[in-house]
Image (cartoon, rainbow, N blue to C red):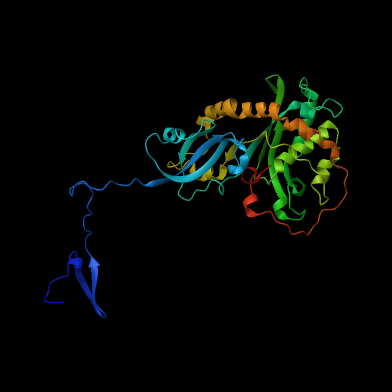
Length: 347
């Protein structure tokens, strides 16, 4: 360098120490950035992004995202700028049959899929599905008796506990550990009438579900109640034997609730985070189901007759098959299809 002048590019730096091969320069201050509109204006400050979860409800008819299953209580996690009226602003850009019903702050490492302890699904179906096979397949005058409802609930209760559900999904061998799933509860609620047709809702809570598992669980119980299959087929379906289990239509399947019990125990009472229980949003969830999900199921059933058409296929199933399943098939479901019904269930 000529003389002792500091080059303009290093004018905001001062020499700190002599290193091998020359001076080592350290920056002592940042030059002020120029902003359009005047040199004195300060640059706008960026809001920090925060980790949150959103409570979502949507009618899945016509969609394939999240496998096209309707949801009244889906939960997704993401980072956002927490601007004022964020929920109203998000909903203003969505169609009426997709709503964000709630928002909560969560820990920075929270993942709504990985931290989920259990999921509750409901399956809404016309009660003529439980009519004996000798009756008309779509008798709209059919009403579920107390005795038949009791039988349905007795059969559904058999699913509680841990069982090998390899017959309730595809590409799972009977000895694959991932085919064993834990069901906390499963029952059918009291029926109700919509547009002259009686419906009932089956609810099931489990730690996780495989692709098509819930629909096959419902389908097998329907086949038993109608008289197409003996009750013994339930116990047999959990063994290594290959059992032909029918898959009920996808129309009535709804994700009801996502549970985060372990997270709530650890962080729900720490004074910084709210428990993820959505009690205050229950009214919104119920209203959305009544306005969008249930009417869609009722109208679609009337127009497309998906349950009636499926019931006509039950006689072709062989419920007395004794072929052994391949114990060492090694067949694997792709990772994108494993996990919960909401992540993997497709038509």
